[in-house]
Image (cartoon, rainbow, N blue to C red; front, top):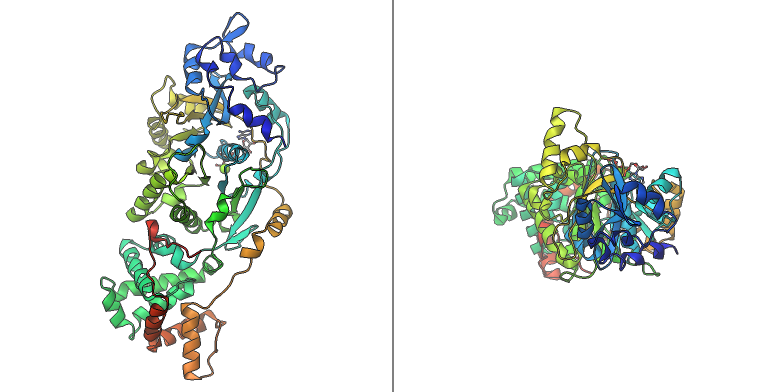
Length: 559
Ligand SMILES: Nc1ncnc2c1ncn2[C@@H]1O[C@H](COP(=O)(O)OP(=O)(O)OP(=O)(O)O)[C@@H](O)[C@H]1O
Ligand SMILES: [Mg+2]
């Protein structure tokens, strides 16, 4: 209802005015006239007639942010410790697919910045994906609560603050937590991402790639972890040795290591994340009935202790979107903006192949209309090749208490375009909810560095109640589609069922053995029997397809 108050003004009143000193005050027509005089005179060092004059440098910055088309409002310029609300700092909407970085020390306002950008995107009809690691982002769905600090900030930056929540959908990996379950099949997840979660080394990663290739060629459906385990178990068995040789480049020893990692991985409770129904990433591209973009929040607090898992899953979502989306070039607005919180987790201990794939995905997904924002503590957490592609920067305060802190600080400063600021000093002195900003102009050139006091999000800062979340989840039309895990017949089930039938032994006839250990011995038994080989062939001819894998080795889904 109140979105219109903040959005439409972004489209027109800021085209020219800020370029000329006299007209600068006119850049803030959205502010209530009553609030303007209060703040403006105090911030302006001099007056020219009735209009407060801005320092020359501030005017130059203002002209760098005077866009003619739709833009998102970040906040107002801070100059000499004063907030200059006449100089509004913003990001042009079409530049949101040119990616971004939100960085800063803990507690400096990164999450609120993400929320601020997300809610304006939603209001402009752009769907957003947010990874909520600490569980403090669900409030994006509910109207915010006014208080003195919010009111003061709004006054400072000339924001007409009214509370508003966004249409939101909540997801949870493997259904762990409050959200619609997100699962991936092993086939779709692919060998590169799986190696990352299994923390395999490069040789093992390559070997897993060969195993996937083998399964793909044979048409073996790797739906869940036990399917993959059955295939690897077969390849390491006496019966499977010939097949293993045929694969070439895959040693029994390495296959054995992979088998053990898989077993350990399952023992850590990782099975619920893999299987069917697989999440269709197309769900992330929806808009609500009133035209606002849906904010999809992936609730991750329950899997906080599994950073490898969730960071890799985030990459899977992105890689999957990449497969499915058509090229759109540079459109007038992004199709989706994807916020990658705690991004360092993605890059830590990543193999070269993995890093290359991230770099390539980030580079190419832009022309499919998807913007990616990494949220992390310092730009140093992001590899240079990726960092170089992040056109929009919101850098919150960095701490420099110890000599060790100096290095990341200096490195951060180097990542910014040249400016009149002493950024080392500025970055250590910023307050909460303040940041050093540079974005891409409508022409795609970096805007002047601007120290900015950010606007306050209009949605709730903090989580909504678990009960409210659960209600939203159960009330979602997607709930019926994804809530229940389905263990359809795939490689493992076919094997166990066929084996049981052929032996007519007192072994379980179909479905899943109850005990894990029992299950393992059964797989060994089955795949060692020779039945697997013939099954592999027959399945292969039945399906008769080889899966096409692209970036990250993820597979194109069959929708
Ligand atoms: N733009 C803003 N408007 C109003 N308040 C803000 C803003 N940014 C930050 N704050 C205040 O600062 C607090 C901390 O911000 P936030 O949670 O975004 O920090 P963070 O950098 O994400 O921290 P962490 O690294 O611990 O996740 C918020 O709870 C809020 O009270
Ligand atoms: Mg945060």
